[in-house]
Image (cartoon, rainbow, N blue to C red; front, side, top):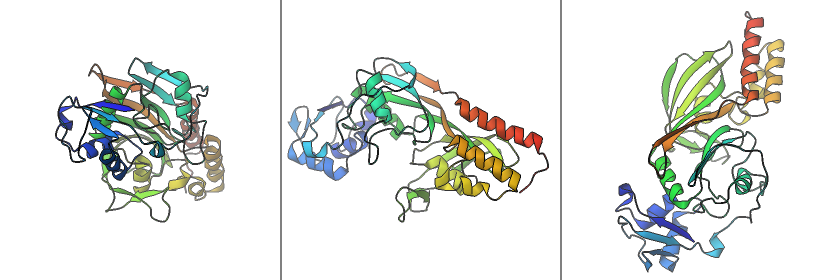
Length: 329
């Protein structure tokens, strides 16, 4: 059973189905409308219409039908997860690279969710059985700071903040090429590719996506860049960086992998190729996350320092430039 309370003025007058669709992840709007019509959703203990307009302090209870509550039975698994902060309503963690956030096809266990179940006694269940506590995600290859909801109340508050683009995010990345501008904004819509649904691309008919960037350090062939995504589209930073001609280092999916290293003279080709294989992921790290605490309302700012292997990668690139100042493509 999922229990929700309308305590945000911004949610007043929203249609019930629209509110549940944006609050409860993993289900289609058609599914949610079917639940409402079948009596699986009650407002103040009364069955209502799909188009019911929410009022302040409404109490919503959702009983997800057994057939719709898909997902494997999860088991708690001991993992080495760095906890940056924990209180009764939220936890903030530093997700390691290589860890899938929640179970899915090909990943039945060994996910971040399995580790969270081991670390914490309570997690929100708004996103269903397969995603307890998960409010937002990072790609498997991306490391860094994530906030986890321990209660449904916290989950709703955090989800609203992400939905309303009130959460401030900062990512550190190593990208290919020489940046012509030190800072700027990429405002390009993103859409899933029809030929390959696991890949996204800049397309006019896509969903709006905005990313601010700031150059930190320019190397001969690579650059350390900070990204500040305003929206939260899947693969947004990776797609936007590649669209600008600066794919993220090691990003095989968007042109920043081994193929990119083959365009250099043999010495550099060997060095960059080895670095890509040694690092074994795309060079993107969620460094900072700022949001309002769901209970106190205070602004909270958390930071996950760059992993040691990321720091060593940047040092190796800087050392290569120092040793080979005359190398070119």
